[in-house]
Length: 302
View 1: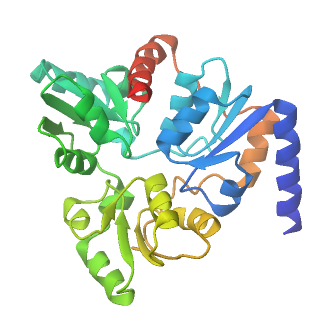
View 2 (view 1 turned 180 degrees about the vertical axis):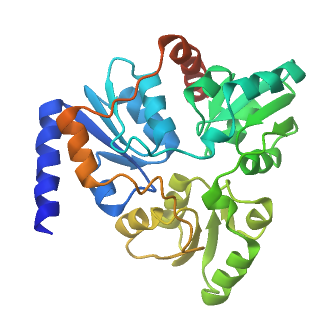
């Protein structure tokens, strides 16, 4: 505990010295969330990277998130404390693969989930997040949409649009592992609980849920609801924030195995080291960043 307190205080001192802001995704560990200036989902953190004042952004998340911050704020130093914290789903499609799909559907618009590499964003018309995917798709004039890389989010979005969505066969390994059996088991254990799931879950899981929302949407629903018990169908890191912000509510994980190991690679020691050394730094080549920025800014304008 003493060592943790020392590191915590060093981070606060270094943050002030570096004029830095610390952003943490909702799936980060509890101590990392607690040291952050802002904890949120991909959309919240993307907006924060564009608007919060600071010379340095310490992004406690995975690689594509830090890349997005670097694209939006090229004048800032963007640090990813754990350099090997990647998103397997983002690596399920490459820019060359997307170019091939585009050549086969020249009249389609390309919507890329923010969980993609900078190179894929550069080949896309517009980005989206799990909270605004439906709104983004419906904002486009094209009737056919290439949606990459998450097939589950694509299928969820298809429920709310008349446009034809062509999904890429990528997926989040954490959410895709959640099955209807997990839902039924959790419901048997907590029969009075409201079931909330993330739209990265499989369609058959979504069909059994009471509500579907992004991580921040789940938090808002729990805090604002008159209900008292909730089954949470997303990565279990969110439970810390739910406990902190909605202390009167009882929240249970839909699956205790819903853990993103890449999100857990960041710890306080790595945050301190990043601030001390200003490394590992995330940069994006100008030519890629310029084209990717258009897709991100178009999303932020929706």
